[in-house]
Every structure is written in C-alpha cells, then in structure tokens.
Image 1 (cartoon, rainbow, N blue to C red):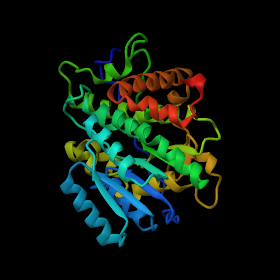
Image 2 (cartoon, rainbow, N blue to C red):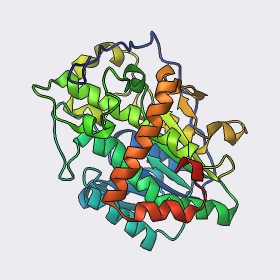
Image 3 (tube, helix red, strand yellow):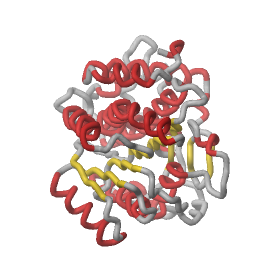
Length: 351
C-alpha cells in the first residue's frame, strides 16, 4: 500500500466510555503554568481548572490578541483568578512560535513548572503553511515540539532551583492507534515528515482525517523520544494524554455526522479536560509521580500506547521522528541546539 492510499479505519468506538473521576486539585500557589490553545474547547476548560488552583501565574494562548483578551476575561470572570497572562501564539507560523518563546524568556519571570501542549486542528482540506509544511503536521506536531525545546531550559532550571519536578504534557489522541508509519506507507528510504507534508493528488476528506491521525501518532513518538533523551533522574517529566472523544471546536471544520457512533460515547470538553489535569499534576491519591514519566494517560490511568508504537518498528520510527524533527527545527531556529546543549542532560549516546 502506498501512502497515497488511505488506510482502513479499523478503530471502533467502545461500547461505553469509562466515567471520568473527579478532577484532581493541587495547590499551584508557587507554580507557573503555560497551556497552549485556550480560547475554546479542552484548552479553555483545562485553563479554568488550573485557574481554580491558585497558580502563581497562569499563561494562556490564543491565535490573536482579540481572542487572548476574551480568554483572559472569561477566566477571570468565571474563576476569579487574577494571575492570568494571555499572549497570542499562532502555531501555523514558526515566526510566531519563536517570538512567543523569546517573549517568555524576557517577560515570563524565569519560571515554568507545567507546560501543556494542547492546541491542535483537523482540516478536511489540504493546506500548506508559509513555512512549507502541511498545516496539520506543523500545527499539531512541529510547532509544539519547537516550543517545548525552546522552553526546556526554563523548565529544567525551575525544577533545579526549586527542588521540584517540571511537567510537559503533550495532548495526543486514541486515534494514533489506527495508523502506523510502517514501510507499506513510509518507504525506508523516504523522509517521514516530507512524506506526511506532501500533497496527494486528488486528496479526499478521508485522506485529511488520516493526516490528523498521523499528527497524533507523531505526538506520541516525539514525546516518548524527548523523555528517552533525558536521564531517568532528570527533573522534567513528559506525559502524553488522550482526553477521550469529545465534541468540541476541534471538529468545527468537519462533518460531525461522520462521527455518529463516537458521539454516542463522547465526553464534554470539561470532562475531557480532566484527563489533561491528571497528566499535568497527577497521579492522584499520592501515587508515585515516576509512573507519569513517559506515560500515556487515558481513562484516568497510565496505559500503554498502541502496540505498533511499542514494536521494534515503532521504536525505529520514534528515532526517525526525533532526528527529522530536530533537523527541521534546528533549521527553523538556530537556538534549538543551544537550548538542548544548555540543559546538560541529554544523553550523548542519543544525540
């Protein structure tokens, strides 16, 4: 099967969705939180939960200044939180990501305890960004990876200075289980990211839905690679999360009718956001935080990602995803390599 052929949709909705447990509440009075993509949906609901935990500072992002102002107003009015800082960030533009990282370094106060990479999109049309990448791949994977790498030194220094553990949460999806990057789709001599960004002649909506699923698999592979490149004792924990199927603004460009069966077991965006909070401040009930290191949170617990991700082929593609992502982002922003080098933590054998 060539990449131009759409894989069969083998992922079926469960008969029921396990109920969400109550949202975890943590004291964040000495913690700084940054959550990306908060003007609607899961991000906004997660931001509301964080805002009710008395954060020292809560940074939130939206695509425009106008949406930033609206988000800040909603959070302040609904939660009473006075520490909200709302800045614009456009993930389809690398220049915006770099500018945001620069601003955070200048004005963020030198502290970051929790980074939640939530923003994402699904499109039924093929679009290429000004940076030359298919939009879904750039927004859902590359830009989030760029922001995480640029802010990694601050996450690390915060943990070391305060004798705490910083957290990076990458929002993926259960749909990563329905695709893989095996040789039937990605030939061994082909560039993974270039292939995923390539225009397919006579593309269909089904093809673009697969691109979204591919981007969620990239999230899993990159997050696991990032954690693998850090020593086991590093005070930075990377956790993946599946919020479950939610009817949210993510589907604003899609025909919800396509997801009729899934809609029957859908969570609300508030219910889905509880999984993000669990990944960010969990585990619950005094559990060992080490179980969150490189973990995948779904349905209130740490579970395994897809069998393919754990296979030898999946591990090989995890390395390929890391190497190609680093190559792309180092060309986009020369400071990426410096950010990695400054941490002094990356295993040399992995670089």
